[in-house]
Image 1: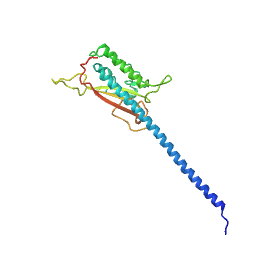
Image 2: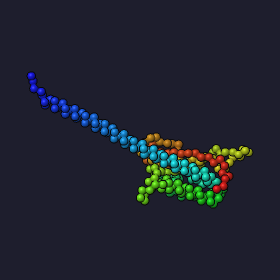
Image 3: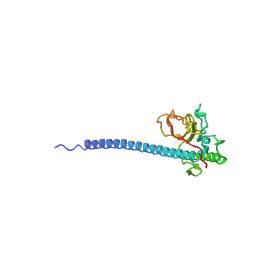
Amino acid sequence: MLAPNNRDESGFGMVEVLVSLIILMIGLLGLAGLMIQGQRSEMESYQRVQALTLLQDMVARINVNRNAAGCYAFTPDTIPNPATSTTYLGTGSTYTPVCNLASATAQQQAQAVADMTAWNSLLLGAAEKSGANSVGVMVGARGCINYDDDNLLTDSTGATIAGSGIYTVSVVWQGLGDTFANTTLLCGNGNYGSEAKRRVVSMPIRIGSINNTN
């Protein structure tokens, strides 16, 4: 009877160990990739929730102070060169909110300025602090509000109602990866390098009647 070949048996065992290690490493790399993707998705979702919160905040402010709604529309309908435009609030903005609306009282005008100033601070992350740094918002957050008077409402006599056009409130920020470039809403266009990284949410609002008092 031939003696067992221990060398062959031990060699075969080493091959099994190496194959098992390779399979384990591949599995761990895949798991690490899933964890990274999960963290990215979580951050993207967090930023979108923050953006929607800021969007609804400004819509509510305009609704409450509707006599001075015209003061909130500081962004022009057409921006020839969005990358060099400062007609937004938030990151990198040099725009100073003002209100000189004859149909609004001094108190209503002051409230509009205060609302836009507060919104600017929120876009910069003032809702949450880490030491002296504002960290409570999205990366590169910016906000725009424009007004379109192409489709005004009419009263019972058929006359158009001044100020009853559509306001569009937009919030933009920088995503963590490329998706697609939004060519419809120009808020923040040209400020994020790749347009495919620019995220945007918007909400239209129409003021049916501004004959209220605050």
